[in-house]
Image 1 (tube, rainbow, N blue to C red):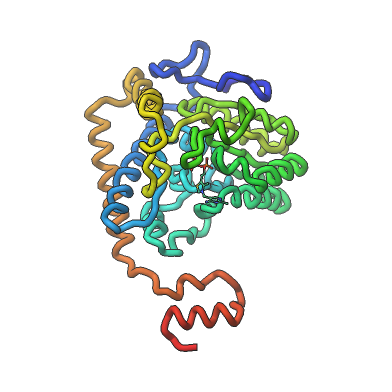
Image 2: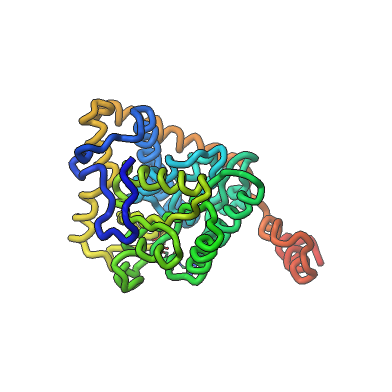
Length: 356
Ligand SMILES: Cc1ncc(C[n+]2csc(CCOP(=O)(O)OP(=O)(O)O)c2C)c(N)n1
């Protein structure tokens, strides 16, 4: 593990160079099996992005936000958690972290087909559902973490949010409360350069989001979000601190959204083509491939075989989800209130044609 660095350090923590070499004097905390598992998760994410995009174009899936470009930020952080006791609170671009907690691909497909059952977690899956209302998940994460402490658990909550979400009042309130309560939270702010078409320079006048941590009385760390090893290292230290009762950490993962905001977006209208090309060269999958190849852990044949297997798994999950009958209109009203008010019962009756 690298030494704790000062809050507000101007240069992002980097352990894995773009050419795939590890910085001199740094040991890889992830062993070969863990590295290969992280590699599998990153390739799985690419396979899911590709398949879900095409399903949306065929009208078989609703709006979907691809992860492409952010795999190392998501996988590196999630692999620092213990899914048996730690929780993940996602935004909507962190499916690999959700899957590691025990969420299934078939459930994700159901979610994106508009089935509320896609948000049901099996017992023991320490995960909150996708959150579309920006930053609403951040106070939930702090409350969850604070509650875990009251229950005597040493569990840690890892909450994800974007540079856009960081401008919401909820983000400030949650970070402040976590600092005051020393809640065991790892805040992973994925700065991917964009909030739909708003560039990060219009999101903040500050040089880094990590520097905000000081104002909340917690450590902050700026990390190269395209570096699996650096993300894992920073998050491992943050998890250890939180577990030991030393409170929250804010990690800024500096990464890049290589694709569109979602399936309804056309980034060619606002992303400079030269910038995109440059950032695609820093693709986290390419970087990890170089590293694993040099270590003799993967080659073109093993990658092709793994990719084929992952694609088949995605297809099987799609088939499983599509075999479930779609929910009826009553599903819109379930789980909204314990005791639905009269006007909602009236709407339910009108939607389902059950009179009223
Ligand atoms: C409260 C709220 N306001 C606005 C939106 C519309 N909206 C959806 S995604 C998005 C941008 C979010 O950017 P960021 O948090 O950086 O995450 P990213 O999509 O880049 O991963 C906006 C403005 C929303 N979903 N919720």
